[in-house]
Every structure is written in C-alpha cells, then in structure tokens.
Length: 165
Ligand code: FE2
Ligand code: FE2
Ligand code: FE2
Image 1 (cartoon, helix red, strand yellow):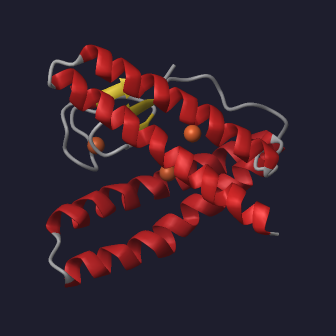
Image 2 (tube, protein in one colour; image 1 turned 30 degrees about the horizontal axis):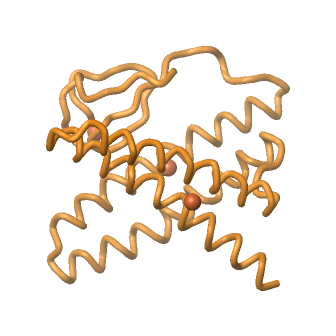
Image 3 (cartoon, helix red, strand yellow; image 1 turned 45 degrees about the horizontal axis):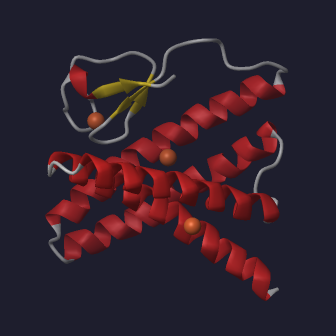
C-alpha cells in the first residue's frame, strides 16, 4: 500500500524535476553557461527515465484506447473543476500573473479534452486519426492543426507556434 503511494509521489517529483531542469537549462543558456545548460538537460533526461520507470511499475500505461480515456478524464477534471477553482482563488487574491497562467491552461485543456475525445471515437471505429499537422503555441499551449495569424487564446503571433514532429 505504502509503496504504491511512494511510486505516485516519486513519479510526480521526477516529472516536475524534468520540467524544472529544462527551464533551468534555458536560463543557463541565456546567461552564457552552455555546459551547465547541458548538465541540466542531461539530468532532465535522466529524471524522465526515472519517471517512466516508476510509471511502468505503477502500471500507468495501458492500451491506447484506455490511455485516451485516462487523458480525457484528466483534461476534463482540469478544465471543469481544478482550473475554475484556481481561477476564482487567483481573482480573490488579485494575483494577475497566476490568473493569466491558469486561464490560458484552462482554455487549452478543454481543447485537449475535445481532441482526445475525437481521437477515441476514431480509434473505436478501428483507425488512427487522419494524418495531419499539429502545432503548439509556445506562449499558452494552444494546440491546433493549422497556424493562425494570431493565437486565439493568448494573441501571440504566428511565429510562436511550434510544429510537432
Ligand atoms: Fe531522478
Ligand atoms: Fe492538456
Ligand atoms: Fe497562444
């Protein structure tokens, strides 16, 4: 029992360390320390190895239909419950930076929820999604199939969109 809780905690911690180290690496690059940046990227990669190992032991990866259901539930929880509550609290505290961060994520999680729902419907029909481009806004995370002139979520320019391989 305790080990299953520990696996969940370790997965969360390693996942956060990965993203934190990648952010630290970018900062080190801008401060002119490319080798320290490389060290942060190396450790970040290693934390991903640890996170995925813990997740495997937790049996956190199933078949793709089941994984889509889990993803739909997670995104649904975020945009229906978690972020709306966080947004209200940020408003009450007049924390504008947190409010913007939560609002951007909230809008995009609903988009993810809908994209995953469509993917699950297609998969249940027996096939992969039709081939097509996918782009992500580097400012807000908006996820789209074609680059708009301006991000409809955060108003970033078209150049803010990153093509996903
Ligand atoms: Fe680690
Ligand atoms: Fe999401
Ligand atoms: Fe955006």
